Image (tube, rainbow, N blue to C red; front, side, top):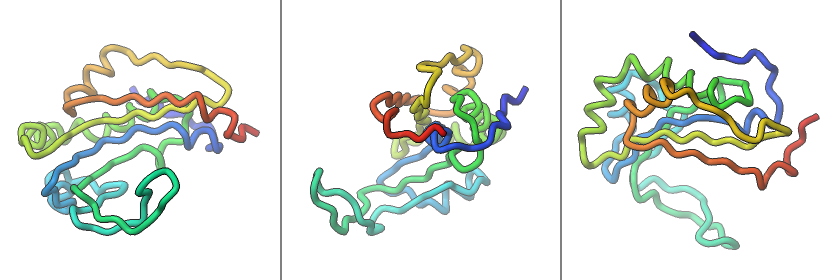
Length: 158
């Protein structure tokens, strides 16, 4: 059953998303795309240049130390409920489980899921059914949860 919200997007809804990612020193993003048959939301290779923070106050050109391939719910699911974002990832990734299992088996790759949650005005927490979490765990080496109540005052919930 799909738990997709049809709530219109708000600034707050953009603060909830789930990402599936693969990282590796010698990761070639096109190779991961070919293996999974899914286009990444974003990706980069080792050696790519970018502008980023050197420290808290300094921004400069930097070089990527590893390759990364990310598939995210952020641009597709317009819901403030993490379960909707996680369900979307499962719908897209479970058919690719054999290929994902082969990536997990390779020691040069780190395969993970990140769930980012900044509540707007509530709920202040959320529940994941064990069966959903179990399915998610079969697709990665770790599941990372980010809960950021410190930014609540920064959100415009109008």
